[in-house]
Image 1 (cartoon, rainbow, N blue to C red):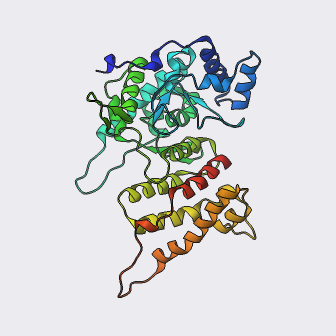
Image 2: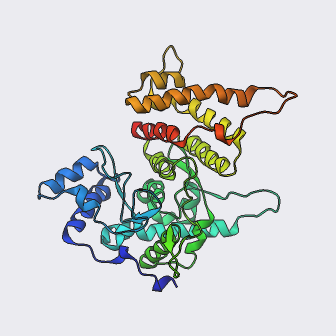
Length: 360
């Protein structure tokens, strides 16, 4: 089945599209970092080309809109990026650029199979959830021939592939990340073309697709979970930024995923507690301490919000009292009245997270 899956990502690119990929890839090959979007626009602009327009002509699979899981040769955060954004190329770009096939794709496939083996060999319990993890040291021990140059880039590469993107903890040059069951979907994939075909199949399966009878159905999710309360694209963006910021984002990502899970399960007390924890956790990303203290009140007052967004933040500030009620009100003889209708609208938190990401 893998070999029969068609993918737009394997189709030849036009001259302008190849110029865009090459402009992104050349500095990465030489320096190990993706170039700034401003640089890319300047380089293509010298040839009379619009980098933004070309970027959005690149083929992608999955969701063709602004929301939902998708995959293409280039990863980027939103339709109109700031000059200091760093769009990246994925393993799929190696189909069109031989230098990336040798530098990224072939080593990545070897790492993927180490992760598959680790997942298959992980112990399983009837009573406890097991969460296999892989570290940089694990990969270096299993594949010593990869070398330090590739290993320094690996955490970034894993961030842009549907099978391997996940929360990650970083300490110096060392990192640890969960190995999800989604890697098992690639058990029989051993070359670049098969990898792209398989990823196409899985990403397309994870979005809404028309059935043969003309009825729209939601296919089972494999590599990307649907948004519940916090916009999934924001969580993914935080995960992608984890390897390029001085801030440790692992706890924030986990709080957000737990919030989504508890919101889906309709657990109002857990939602209140998690949202309250998030409001206490993020202020250092947005404001400087005053008298040695950082509070969400300072975020509301001192960060440069638009009028509408600041109104949202004031509402989140007011919610903290309600969160304290859930956390600290002691047992009594009458029933508690908190329910899911008391959880704040998702838009308020999504605005806060958008600001946090932009500040990284």
